[in-house]
Image (cartoon, rainbow, N blue to C red):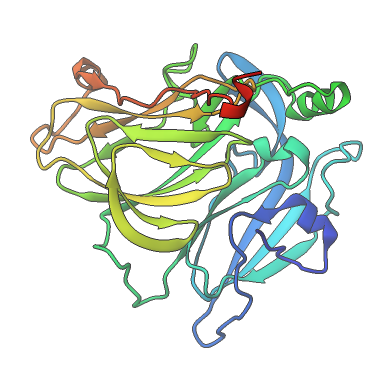
Length: 332
């Protein structure tokens, strides 16, 4: 469920949708401040696995910019269109401004395009922090890490879905999954486009995880580490530990990662891949980022030293589980 930042504007509702939950529209003027953001909808050349294409972006970024506010703040977002007029699927007039109130909905959300498959490139995190003086119901993390999963298509996603609608067949699958817009080293010529997170031993990190993939549920795991789930869809939950997390498309999940007490002399894959129980086609590839430990005893950690460290990979569940037919059909 979503909310338009300008309820009276169908144009804005067509372009942006805040996922998962409706923001409570009850500002508290004695506590709130106004935070302003500028969104320029523009074409941008972007290169991912050996392929460069022009795609619709916000502020030329893939993923788009991060919105950060505190519970009760007022958001003022100015959206300006810089794409050609014949790109009819960007339903917004130049210079329109939109505002909403983010009172009563702290947590991790995200904005995305809401017209066909434009959302494959038009999306970004929304992070609403608790009010000042209101702590988390868990130990304060050392650092917060927005982590957004997405997809990369070499072809134009709009053309892909339009062809599928015309033929009645399934749409072509994506060419890669991404973590924070980067496909990672398991795809061709993508080692330099890898999300890397440097962490310190004995610290707690809060991962704000968002699945912005179009249709795929994703398994996520960090090799040799345990995740503690503390929040799902911007709602606190009773914390529980897991080695592998399943996150649905459009879902957000906050997890705590407590790093090892001492430098492990190793690096670790942070990997995600899809899961499906049906017969349909889907991208069965795996996206990976790298968790790197900082060594306090080494003032300079060269890239050569880091590359020599062993790299551990998580054991993710299989991509697909085909369910048996109902018992009453097996006799046919």
